[in-house]
Length: 400
Ligand SMILES: Cc1cc2nc3c(=O)[nH]c(=O)nc-3n(C[C@H](O)[C@H](O)[C@H](O)COP(=O)(O)OP(=O)(O)OC[C@H]3O[C@@H](n4cnc5c(N)ncnc54)[C@H](O)[C@@H]3O)c2cc1C
Image 1 (cartoon, rainbow, N blue to C red):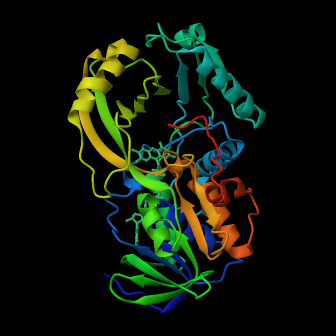
Image 2 (tube, protein in one colour; image 1 turned 60 degrees about the horizontal axis):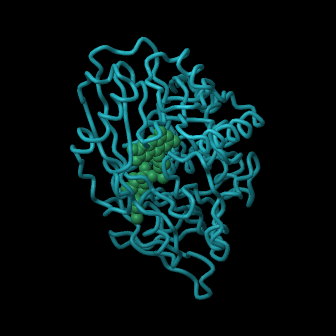
């Protein structure tokens, strides 16, 4: 355990993975912010963080305009990463491998949803195409499309990016600029008597650390952190399985990130391929449960892959892992910004399966909120906590 250097900070961030580091970096690099920042991370190896288990893809194909806009900035940020990091020659250029997401519809109702989504995305400038089965077959002859009637695909700003480098450089540069990271755990919080402010956080090593603002970046453990301030948060850990496999005869072109109607998704992953899915019985799991289910691969995922892409009958599993989504049970969307009554408690939670790509826009937005009291670049208030308090879900129809 590391002790903090001071006994109070302007901003205390609980959790130092991609979000803790995004908020810390966007704050410390803002010339209008002159406070001190402490990032408390219970596991600096990040072995169980969502950030370490991610599939690291980005898409424009959402149904909620705010999610499209968030990812549009995400893609721009990734493409111009070095520029955004102050043209530092040490910072690498990041590539966005744009194979696109391909949503497949096997019924008219979902095809209608895809047509509507395409309209929303195109109105915001995204390159999504609604495709007939014949058009999909012409572009990607390796699919078996017998049951498919249509699909949506977008080859612009959609695909894989190196989220780990983004995280690594935000953390590194934030530290260089004076953000203090400590290996420790926040275990409780003290509130004022009116219960309108968090006054301090208590660390597992015993220190009581005063805070101007506290930011909840605790990933799947976010509800535990909120409860320390007496607040409810509908976020729970849910398992997601990833499988990397090799094909005996590789495809002759990229495999788009294909969202099969079965719920299994698959994509190109360098010279390999990556597939993922939820468990059949999807629900909350213990924070420490990362056990794999090998029957899932044999009995479900492989047969689905081989049916959709007959060339995948001959494949070899190379690697697999289980990660946790910080699953927002209300609407699977991010929950961002202050609690309406306890305004110095900032949520940065509930990203479910699309948090990595949202980190540039959300890091920037929360840094603006803390510095200026409002969002400046992109209004993230549709994702505010108010909808949780009012039980008013923001329905996103493109959830993976
Ligand atoms: C299998 C899988 C695939 C995914 N694929 C994609 C994808 O393709 N595209 C995409 O955009 N997103 C994807 N995601 C989602 C994305 O990875 C997450 O939304 C994102 O990484 C969340 O980051 P985070 O910092 O909020 O949480 P985490 O990475 O979980 O970090 C939270 C940190 O908080 C620390 N912490 C918790 N409680 C405390 C405490 N009390 N005190 C101190 N420290 C604490 C933890 O140790 C942890 O390091 C995927 C996720 C998974 C699991």
